[in-house]
Image (tube, rainbow, N blue to C red):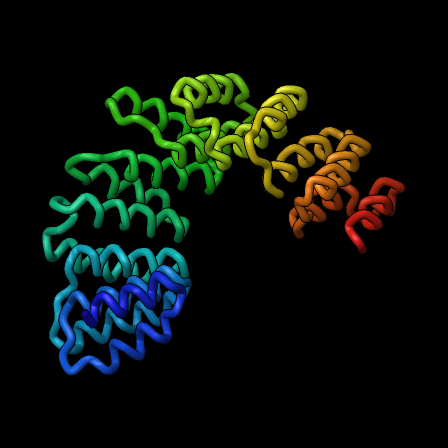
Length: 295
């Protein structure tokens, strides 16, 4: 019952209440400790999660696989690399890296978030088998940290090994395509997405618009944009970023006006993508943008 209460408060975005229930327990076990750590980790209270991890060990409890996964998530979220390395050593001592894929995947993700891609790949290579989560974590790392070519190479390798990409994998790979202007690979991924019926996924649709826009294929970006079943501020920003990047200021302004007509409010990124190309100048387009954006 206590675990259920802690878990419920954590899932309801009330980690302080979860802590209060935990503190009232006459006896605690690894399940209740892990539930509390999971709640803190999920709600961006990484330091509290790591404090709990230390406390459970000080109280004579040994982490299980779920405890390690949640704590590694906390390390990654706050970029606590040294603590992550310390936990990695404990996992190695427990012999868990070769027996629990979820723990291995969490280690890869932690190193990726902390910017140590080579270390993430080292852990990846040591796993007895890799699933779509393993591959996607690695691809995300390369895409995020400036090695788009390796991200796309990983996509090809995972498919050769019979591991099917999921929507998150495709999003990361489309980001990689956009960064290096590899529109041909982007088109290939686009075809796969359509064939698998995944285009209804908003994040994928947005990633496609962004990829085509970054590569300068603005007509194709607009075609994808127009068939999206739903559009949010990210969709609009992706299209406008292409117009701004390739100096189609009037089209960008028209997008801004239309998105507001459709009830989608601009965000800070909308302003930044417009003004970054006009830093140090006050053009007519920039002034018009400011008026529309209430600046």
